[in-house]
Picture 1 (cartoon, rainbow, N blue to C red):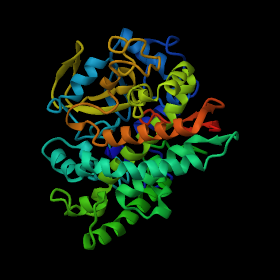
Picture 2: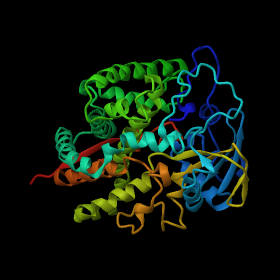
Picture 3: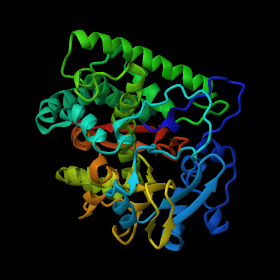
Amino acid sequence: MSESAIEQDSNPSTEFRTPEQEQAANGEGVPGAYDMPLADINPVNAHIFKDNTWPEYFERLRAEDPVHFNEIETAGRYWSLTRYEDIKKVDSDWQNFSSASGITLGFKLGVEVPGNLFQGSTAFISQDPPTHDDQRKTVAGVAAPGNLAKMESLIRERTGRVLDSLPDGEAFDWVDNVSIELTTMMLATLFDFPFEDRRKLTRWSDIVFAIPEPGGLVETQAQKREELMECVDYFSRLWDERRENPGNDLVSMLVHGEATKDMPPAAHLGNLLLLIVGGNDTTRNTMSGSVYSLNKFPEQYDKLIASPELIPKMVAEVIRWQTPLSYMRRTATRDVEVGGKQIKKDDQVLMWYVSGNRDENVFENAQVLDIERANARQHLSFGFGIHRCMGNRLAELQLRVLWEEILKRFEKIEVLEEPSRTFSSFVKGYTYMPVKLTRKTS
């Protein structure tokens, strides 16, 4: 996890904004994409994602300025890549574009960060080889094909149980009752985490990228710091337990892995949060996005109902269309050119997966959900190169099983109103989505 994602202000009276907070504070009433000068477009502004107006900003950038420059006080210089080919090229080139300084927009060089509680707690996704490879290898076995085959029956049993518990013909929140519940149960299994406390994993995942605001998920940096300390303390206890009694879970793998066993608990926070966010935010938001997108394109929903064998293709297309993490950051290790623009050493580079997945040069009618799209699996949502998502097959398995079980049980799942969306430019998700379902009678 990037250091900027977990920077905490130990003094609640101190005003110190992260780059995304700086943009959020200035973002109320942001003009439309074509109502402002091109140079003023800053896609890091979380308001355009919460308001779901992001597509037009990226449409304009792809057409007019696909390697787009911004500079703000806290972050300094950073570039937004919005076309598919540029993103894929940079994502595959770890020598010129390093992950070691973080995966989200961070602070410019020389900025003093007050109260950075977790200094040095970097995850393997925020590392380059060989450190990245050694740490990733420690936990990669959890998503190995053999292990996934063993988990499918458990995933199916739990999915069926959750779906059978839903009310028929009454409004309820799909996000909380299905998406969060299923992904949290899966996370608890992967960590061998106390099942009765599994919603703590959801909470910790949510606050990692939460922007403190009055009435928000967290209101202050101090509150955020306190809750992440709870995460450290909780996993420290699990650490001690698994050191003496190891199992076949992610905590045990990290405790006993050659590349990770000597790390102190706080230094493990990055890897823990990476695995929690990777297993929670991405899958749960695509689960919600699948229901939302099929309602938005009802002819595709009808096609799926008529031909359930299209579920695997639908899963890949929904992952493209939803893009649960909007971007990933890299940092230039030397002066380099991308798309005709001169990027300087130490400039931050944001690879906007959410834009590349809507690039019409690669995906015809890219704004549309097409569950028979021939090249849907070429989406950018899982990344490319050494950082390609380790749990991509597990995510696809959970989504496939969910829709196999949905089609067995329900005539339709109807979205009753526009969902509420996550206030973040990094996590592209849903916080509330009321639905009503109709069960099959035979």
